[in-house]
Length: 222
Image (cartoon, rainbow, N blue to C red; front, side, top):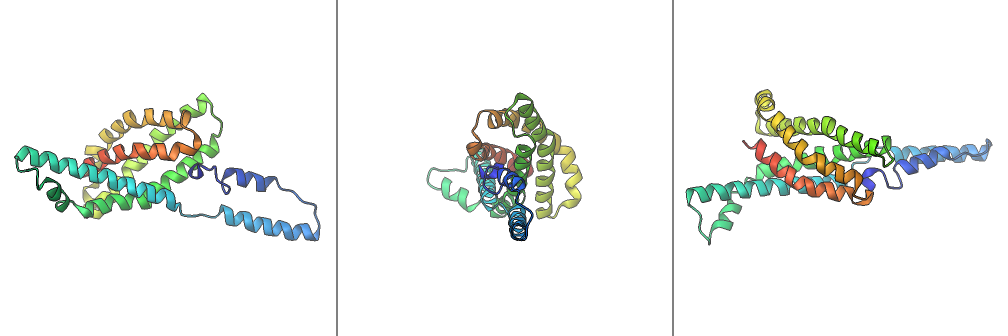
């Protein structure tokens, strides 16, 4: 998968360019210069649009599910729902600002960030060994997990204009959310790194992200 460094401009392409050698003459110097420019162009930063759109879409889906279920349960508890207007009432009451908040987080932060993270893991630990599997899963939980929670809570409070309440939010919800993430993401990560083929890993983690985004969105709205 391109997101994990398997594309032509990824690790393999970089290694190939590093191994290229030519005789030291005027023509080779010109070709070396062009090669170095080409390599520099390939190694330059490119915004991972595909991953950003995928992450934003899944964040939107997770938040939508969270909102619909929350409103359905409230209406059911208050016995104010009817078969005819349930669906339309849920759509009319949808908090689109909250949905935009989660979507923008996925598009601007989580998508590009996770793209870079998984490329880094595959670059540092390319071999499929038990040791590398353990290290990838461990790093996912102790590095990526806390970073995601810290950033998404800060993003949410910034949008709501409640930055001063962020320390209390961390104290109240950060640890429970992280522990819940351990229970959910450790099995998912083991399957992703060990069983799922490289070309299908992003899609597999994206499916898991729907459930995670649902829980995360519910937690932040409390």
